[in-house]
Amino acid sequence: MEPRPRHPAAIVGCLLIVFMIVLNSEVFGLSGVRMWNPEAIRAGESLHLSCDYNLEGTPLYSIKWYFGDEEFYRYVPKESPPTRVFPLSGTASVDISESDDHAVTMNNLPRDMSGHYKCEVSADAPLFHTQIKESFITIIEEPKSPPIVFAGKLKYSKGEPIAINCTSYSGFPATNLTWYINDVKVTSMTKHVVIKSRVLTEPGGMQTSKSRLETVARPIYFPGGRMIVRCESSQFELYKKYTVTELVDDSPKIAQMMSPSTVLGAGGPQINSANYLVTRNALLLITILANQFIPFFSR
Image (cartoon, rainbow, N blue to C red):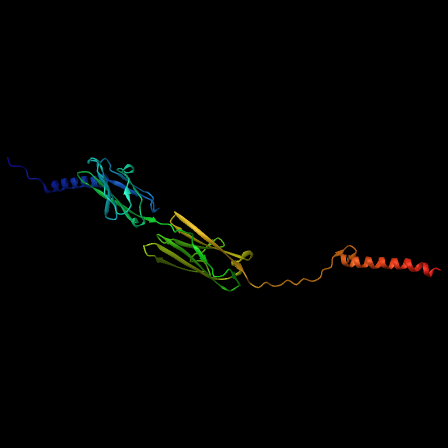
């Protein structure tokens, strides 16, 4: 008896079912891959990276970590030992005791290891589905000193131009310089104030930030005769220092004319103490002379 030929529609249906099973296995076999890391750390500190994922019952094949395209750590459960470390240039090293199938710790990172870090998670057979997450991390070097502020002079008259320079030397990356006038932050929307900023790269890669505040002396800037200007230098949430300078209002002051004043009492104008003393002495002298001459005229 000859075998019954299969209907083409049944074959297509079977293929669709197999395709959907494979597709669902790939989508739901590995999901929720997320990478956790700080935005920045200081040079020489430890970097802790974490990679979360959901295998939905599928075995883990491997997790690999990269700096750029350079692999530095691998975890493969089927191997013994499951961890493997690859050497990195410079002082950086992987702390195996603080690393596993979800996290890795690196020590003594130099600033030239700022860049993209990647986590690659692969599920096991039969699909070997792989997902990669990456994030940019900055390794900072703080400036050795607070920003330096130079105002040229400290006394200004109304309408006189004011120019103040602020410099933050030798940091990486270049620090952000922010100005405040009387504790109010200066922005691009601040009227009558112009900010000019630039970054200089030093030999060796360190960077210097320069900023210049320009405005005109106005009475509103000098409450109580003083204008407080602050320049703040910052790098992410790790570094923040500032320098304050105080400017003085030197505008001409209108002299106040003082006129003699008369103190009035209930009985009218009162003489002052000096006039009272003169009057008393005069009366005393008259009394003495009278006592001397009255006996003479009475003879």
